[in-house]
Structures are given as structure tokens and as C-alpha cells.
Image (cartoon, rainbow, N blue to C red; front, top):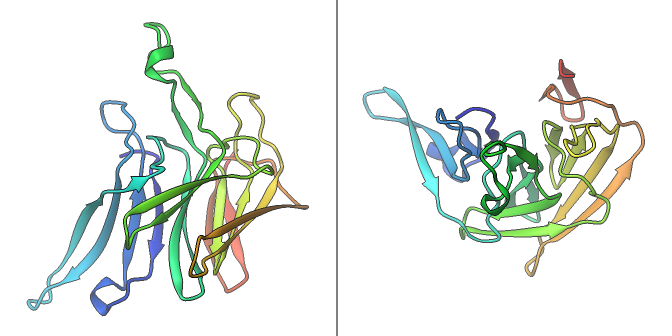
Length: 206
């Protein structure tokens, strides 16, 4: 896969303490994938370390095949969920022509909440998110995700927006809210990593 979304998750047991969620991306045949995998390290009695990759089946509002999106894991009230946002997808089959068979469009600006324990997925429409940004940067801290920059294919712009998604996971239905913060940067295709509890470093991009 090329351009998949990847994030690290904390497992519940010692054998699951290092796991990664992989979603979407392009295949070698230039097709888009909608599959979700969980990959972890397996330590065998012989001390040989191997990787185990499992495909996860989801029900509900399953996100369409895409690339250039992000996936993060949030933690709230002792529970964890993954959040998928943005990216690009091919135009629907009914709208394709021979000349534009592999033309891509922005995905709808829906926020997908994925519960891997029960295998269900729910989408949310938030008024603050007007564009299905691709190749944006996202970082997660506890119950909050920050989304920075990205490229809007429809408008051919990189809006300097900074969004804060807050995910609350009570016993009932989850709550998702969005706030537009000042201090955004017009950037896409950058890399970001966490260097401290409240510090992140971003490198490169357009």
C-alpha cells in the first residue's frame, strides 16, 4: 500500500502493547483500498520476533476507499477509539468516463469514529469542517485531535486552518465537537512526530 493512514495503539495485554492500525492507501495496481489492518509484534518462546497482521471487518458507516487521510487514536473515560478524517478517492463509478477513469476528488469532510472492540464505525458531520482535506497533519493527545493544513483539490488551496476535535466517550453515544483555532499554517504533505507531552515537531511538506 502507498499513502495509507497509520497510527499506533496501546494494547490491553503485554503481547499487544505495540500495535499499529493501517487504513486505506493505493495498491500496486493503482486501486484504492478500504481495508483496515491491525499489525502487532509477536514474541515467541524462541525469542524470535515476528509481525502479525489481521484484517478488521467493520459495520455501520464504513469509510470509503481513500488515500492521503489520517487516522488517530483517542482515549476518554477509560475507553479508546480511532478517528479517520480526510483524504482523496476516485470519482464514483457512475460518473467515470474513459478519459477520467482514475480522476480523484476530495472525500466528504466526515469524521469517522471506529470502535475496534465491537467492529463498528459511525460518521459525523461537523459544520466547522467544510472541506475534505487531504495530506493534512493530525496529532492526538488524550481525547483531542488537532488537524492542521491540508490541500483542497476542489479549490486548489491549502487553507491555513487549525482544527481541534474533541471526542467524549461516555457510557452512551459518543460526542464529537470541533473548534477552529488561530495560528494555522498553510501546509500539506508534512511529517509530524511527538517529542514531549505537549510538544510536537513538524518537518517538510508543501
